[in-house]
Image 1 (tube, helix red, strand yellow):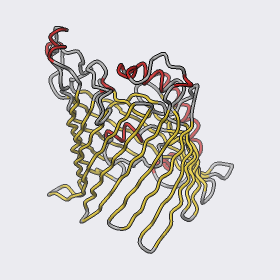
Image 2: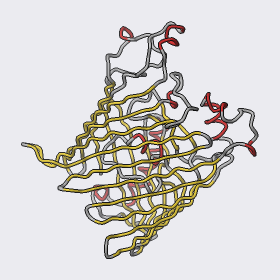
Image 3: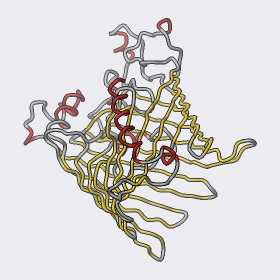
Image 4: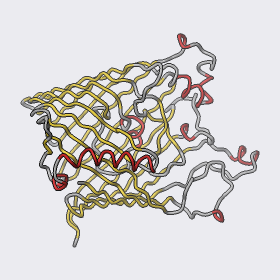
Length: 401
């Protein structure tokens, strides 16, 4: 915490002399001697989290995989300080500092060129297919595939046609490593994801194409990304070391030149906006070496007015993430949560208290197939754990400036 405080103090010392503090709370850019204008904004998320079931030592059960903290608790999920450098009408540079309980670091940073219907982005950001969320919780396939940041060069061109608007784009990126992340708020059982780009030996490149067609009230998108697994961060450290059954399709002592290092993921998204209701569905399929995964979600959202409560955002979403769908190679194992098949239902509400503050209430209903058997539980003298009781309640106060 001392390190985070020192970094935050340094940033404040550098920023505040640029202009009056009052400028931070409006949209008036800060002007520095070079003539480059800067827009400063920020966000803090304060959360209350409660995982299903009672906590405490007296309520512990004889299970192999346990929830880290069942008792209700609060935390600052993140604090962000964001800057946008306005070099010209067409060129901007965005970067953001993120602070959490354990660290402080530069999160996203990218240069953007926009002119007419052309957009080019260079830097570290989420893939172009990533959605700007309306809920705190991601869809399972969002966490798995497009939540992680990557270093990329993205280009997109929008064409206005007589029957609607067509967007086409391409991407060259440093492939994100196979990593682990939380399904939602509880951090007990990690799932396999494409993580954030960091410096790694054996880095490879990923190429992508994407397109979308919009004609009210419909919008459809599609994308395809391909490349090679990182040598040997992906195929050796993740696939061979972390998946017991991987040796059934490729020997653990395989040489890099003989390993299956193919990598691709593709998907599509469809949206329908009708009578103030947004209905969205998405599907993604991926292959990393011999490991196949897929998933989908379907959601509906609408802003409604209730007595005494105007503009209440509501959403319901259901989705799945599956390992080796339809196959017979990779089976779920209780000891390894990243091998579990998962489903997630999200029920969410959001209310704007002011223009810069929002209250979110979300409930996550999770279902994990752990692969446990009664025979294994008896042999290990423990409770049978075919499912995990980890439904979660989130209440969040989002503060922006």
